[in-house]
Image 1 (cartoon, rainbow, N blue to C red):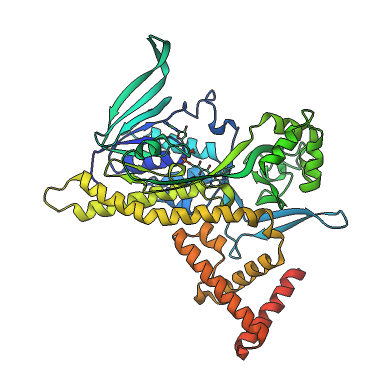
Image 2 (image 1 turned 135 degrees about the horizontal axis):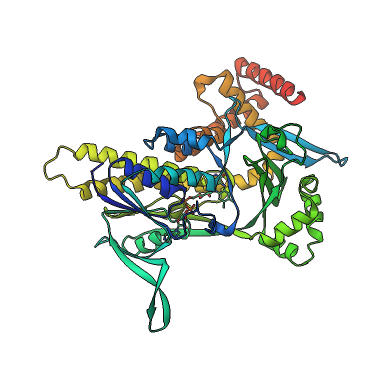
Length: 495
Ligand code: FAD
């Protein structure tokens, strides 16, 4: 990529921080403007006003960090993670007995990693702090941008100046070569970009709100080992599928679990209707059996009333850039519902793909006469939007579909059989290249749009083979394979 451009990054969340790292390691002058204070300062109000969000970090996010040119980053980040190798489904049998059923994500034993979003973000900021060509501007809110003149305006929270109508915030103007907008779902960069490019834009609030709860560590763990502090398995993402609702728990590295209730807005209204909260524990006992053994009813009620009830938004737009001046990444470009655990992973992957494409075009133009960084970047950004839009739209759709899978399909025999069959085929016939959709999304770096195509194809082939088997219209080898598979399945289920 061209040297010594002034790159401004808007938003110091995980995606903006990683983008700043990529830009700075290519020798550019990088300025990061962030609306809030430095999140390493305890007085800063966290994003969404929640204490923490525990996220599932998976291969795409890790791969993007691996390529950031900072060898210690991955170890630094991984040190604060807990591997989750599958889902633990919690339920109640018809006789009233509680049960747990582990469903591994991957037959090859691969795991996704639980991490605190704030913790990951702080680690990225720490590394950026060490780079001499990076300057932070906290408490700076982007309020305007001119992408033809490459100028931007910010409201600065630290100081105020007197005006006719009393005090108002101080405003500053800056110029830049290239702006990277990583300012989240309600992106100001995207808003201003729309005035310059014919951007298609679509947003959807799904009829689900989320609220956080916590499972505290054991009071008297058997020993000092962190693992013995957890009240339920730390190596699983716990799910209480309630068909219309869902409750999940993700481990933290202090022995707690951060839990999230996902439910339609009308249920929140119903639960809010009694200020005493007396029916909240009943609701949990009905739909999420066993939770009241892990979170005392009084704590359930107080968390429900004191933690915010937040919406979930899904955004699709295109293109992601204007000329050579600006591009949007992460939630600013494609906020998605959290049910595939891919929002941040996809945003971090955006950074890797953007810089791969910028580097490729810079190499192509390096030896041309009158080499102009802006026109090289414009061609690269054109390609970036073309390539990335399809993939971002694909994962947005998968994330919406996965809500049904998590809260209901995990209980269905058909779903379990297909998962099992695809996993067996991946082991016994590796040359076919079969994998479950989940494995392709979470443990690989294939384009999301390719994942969808391959998984649809696998589904069709399976359906044809099973139909053929059923009607005896296929040859002996397939029947034999079916019998072997059925026996193996029976054994696996019996175990
Ligand atoms: P953000 O994290 O939103 O950061 C944007 C930054 O820009 C903020 O710091 C903000 O203060 C700043 N900003 C905003 N406006 C301005 C402005 N005008 N000027 C300057 N700065 C500004 N993803 C996963 O990969 N795995 C998961 O398991 C997962 N679980 C999730 C669970 C829940 C309940 C939710 C809600 C989300 C989950 N996600 C998950 C999604 C993930 O949180 C987001 O995709 C990720 O945080 C997006 O990062 P970002 O840097 O693009 O945006």
